Structure formats: C-alpha cells, structure tokens
Length: 182
Image (cartoon, rainbow, N blue to C red; front, side, top):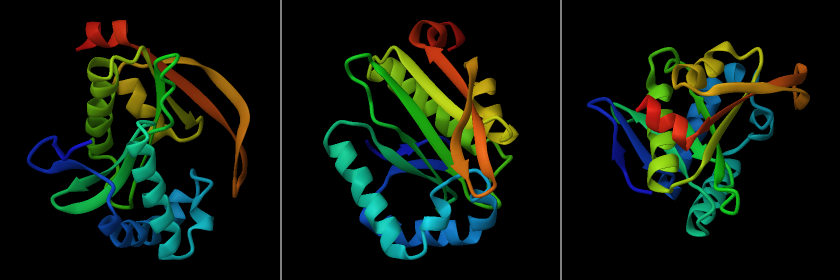
C-alpha cells in the first residue's frame, strides 16, 4: 500500500517500524475505552508487543495477504484500519478498525473505511467485504451502516472480552452493490 491522502486532515499510511512507538502510546492513552471492545488490549503491556504487531502487518502485506494502515489526523496517529487475511479463492475480505481516545465521532473512520472498501472492490476486484462488530458497539456498527453494508446476521457469543462474551453483528457488501452506491 501507499500513503493515501483522504482530505486536508486525514491520511492513511501503511504501518512501518517507526510507527510502533506512537501506536503504543495511542493504545496506552485509549486503553480503558479500547478494552471494552477489543480482546487484545490487556495483552499489550509493552512496546515490544506493538513492534511484533507491526512486523506481522508488514509480513502480511509482503505476502499479499492484506495490509494494515495507520489513520493519521493532522499528522497524529489516530487509529488503525486493516484487511484481515484476504481470501483470494473466494475473493473476499474482512475489515477491522479502531480509533484512539479523542478521535471518535468525527467521521474519520468512516472516511478511511470508504477508501478500503473502494480499494478492495474496485482495485483488487474482490467480490465481497465484511465488517463484524460487537452488537453493543453502536459507534462501530454505524460505520458499515453509513456505507450501505447489509446486516446479514448476528453470531452469538463469538468473542470473549474482559466483560464476558459478546455477539457480533455481521455486515456484508458486494461489489455489485458498491457500484450502485458509488
């Protein structure tokens, strides 16, 4: 992937080793909010955990299995968005994302997701994009809903968080549907 300027404020940059420190600091500042919805947060206790994550993201991109980018707002790392492992045989992919404290509710992640959906469906010519969110995570669910995804169902007790098991809402969007929306 390449640096992608969304607008005057927003830019997507592929994760690189030099992003490990700002990413770790963003997790630290946002830990209490993030741990409510993301199972990995409590396991990130030192910067080396983020270094490993960044290395894995770079390897995944090198292996053509997807990529992960930092979302930068006015030069500050605000969050992460990435493709889960691309299923080339079935031409589908899932998108995952999160925003740090203070960046939510401003439309940043919706804009970043729009770029990722465009790229997946129109540039990579995938057939399907999926987004899964905890059913109680209303802000996260708003993103696929604003982008025209279809709620395809709910998977019960699919993820264990510190507060217990949560259900996931599964949203899907097909290339033919995205062309109609664009």
